[in-house]
Image (cartoon, rainbow, N blue to C red):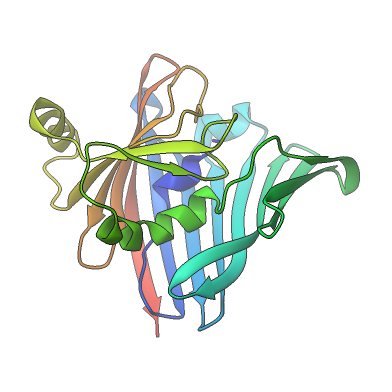
Length: 244
């Protein structure tokens, strides 16, 4: 379920707390996962927390796997600047945790690997990015306003391509847009295609489609193409709560 968090990203608003829940369906397996997302911020700090829990047969096969993703950092001039990105994975009796620490001054990212509470490795990534995939999503509305219109928008964030964090964002057009709209039952909103260059599941190519509410940047539906060469993984919003 790596990068599945992209399906559960919520919104970019000036509110202090936002909570959303999502579902994920996969072919004949039906609903295979549920997810929740929490965004908290004030004038100077922010925290994003996402949790994904496997359900049904997938839960059994994955030893009831639960994954979480967090981004913690500062808010400066309306932009989220991560200080730490944390991912955890509980599978059976094992608990894995990775902490990524951003050193923006020296342009490097340090990764700490833990297993069952014990530090297994400490290393510096071979590349630096100014943000992670969560903070990038929340920063995206502002970026798109400032960047001149183009066919492909290229960004670099932790969680993108393994070699450098590259992520390409495009707006589907023509036949592609028509086909994606049909897949999403003509859901109203802005259609975005993201190439993460990083497989979400075995067999796919890291291609993600999102339908976003333009007024508040809520992700309404999402899809990962060609998972395991069997079908598409689809997700959608169930509930949303705004706490001013």
